[in-house]
Image (cartoon, rainbow over all chains, first blue to last red; front, top):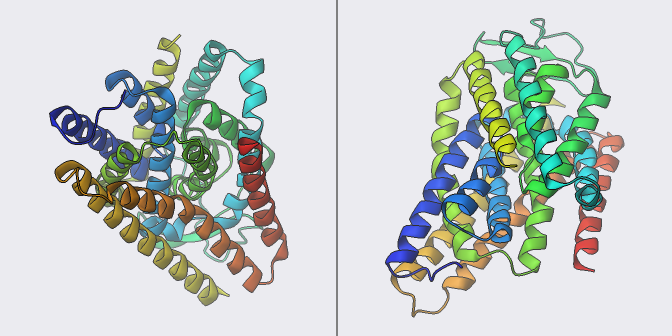
Length: 279
Length: 97
């Protein structure tokens, strides 16, 4: 039960929600994630918020993180065409989430998700120094690739998207899982696009941020329509995200690509362990 | 072509920043009212308005991206964006039935 906003209990609770939102926003802005993967367990386990209210608040913060990244410096890195194509698979995956919920038990889902996190982390670990870029700025990026100014080398670089069917399959699974777990799905898309599909990590993060905002919108509106979105709680989380994402964006501009990948691997292992321990 | 893309990116960034500023201001004002003046009316309306603006923002960016593709004459990606919006609308219809 959520206490009234005013009063000492309410003040402490909403301050804690804002702090949780700030952490989720900082990590989200740094890695292109919505942050729901951190916020949902924090709200339900640490603050005893009912799961559906936690999922609703989480989806709104995913949108907040997405807009923060898309309107900031990361905007120039968004690959809109790739985002549009993958969003079809993501939304289709989220639509059949109900079918998966019946076919797969929650415990099995957690095992599959946890194992998947460890597998992606292992692949990312072997590709720490792979930059996925072509130094020739005049190279043809193909229909879904692109070019951008790379801060590390101070030059315009080109990248090509490879293994599109794998990216579509991964986005479908990410959409499916996002419905079931109340997350944006960036935790799967960013490392997948970078490790397997030739997309540089900063482009993968920015494009993922663009996509997860759209994906989370449908879920958030549904919760809102059903009266499960508690305005004050969602607002506290969103305001926290605003503070955290600003700090995360400033930090991300100074962090080398290799370090971003290392942080991503750490997050994948932690989330994978959390999933496997929650059986 | 490149300047059109830059203009489109600029419009998208402006829309996102405007939505961010307005929604944050509404949410902050609503929280201040709810925390420090709980007897004053309007807190819930401010919070709800802020959240609604936030929720429609990603769809606006999607539409902006589609408009940009249309301006460049690449109708394949306009159609793809249309499919995404149709799927989103379908999921809402299914959810509310």
